[in-house]
Every structure is written in C-alpha cells, then in structure tokens.
Image: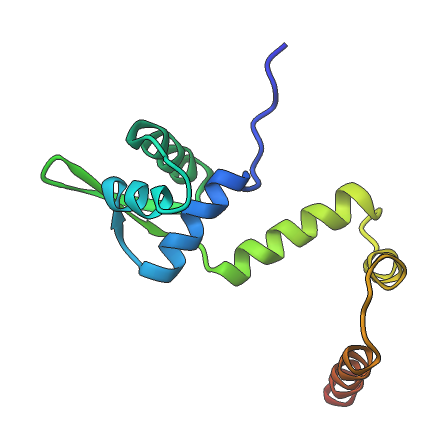
Length: 128
C-alpha cells in the first residue's frame, strides 16, 4: 500500500526552505551548491525536492532560460504555525495546555524564561 503524502515539511525540504527564506529566489543549482557546503547533495535530488515543495504549496517557481528559479510562497511563521498545529493535533489532542505541560516537564526551561512567558501571557490578557 502506498504511503500517504505528507503536507508537512521533511528535513530535506526544511533545509531548502531555510535557504529560500534567507536568500529569496534561488535556482536549483544555487540551492544544491548551498546544501553541498554541509553535505554533498545531488542536483537531481534538489530538483525533485523543489518540485515537491511547489506541489505542497510551500514554493513557487519560474523558468529562466533552462533553469528553474524557486522562491518561498509561504512565510517561515506560517510554516511554523502549520507544523505546530499538526503537532498539536497528532500528539496532544489539539490541546495547547498539554503541549505546554509537556514542555515544562521535559525541558530544562529556566525561571527567567518562564517569567518572560508569563509576562507575555499577562500582556495578551490585558489587550483582550
């Protein structure tokens, strides 16, 4: 049975999106060169992943001569929001409270960070 296609970013797609968010428009060749600084990455692999990003709606492209030039069609914040919503739905029953409890229990969050978070919560309550 075929695996269901994910509408979320894979690690490889995330790496490409980071490049697009940082640099704006990039050709497949430029993306492959940037990725290859850390780990050798084949042009055809990048080309395939860019096509998938376009199919998922994360990137747009235009043809420039023989090259395809890609750009992000979704902001980093919108991608984060989508990923967080997916995480909440899949693992925490759509409950931000359960996620927050998990983070408090499983991470070494410092008191100053908790105080800053509480201040943001209080400020949000005051503006509502």
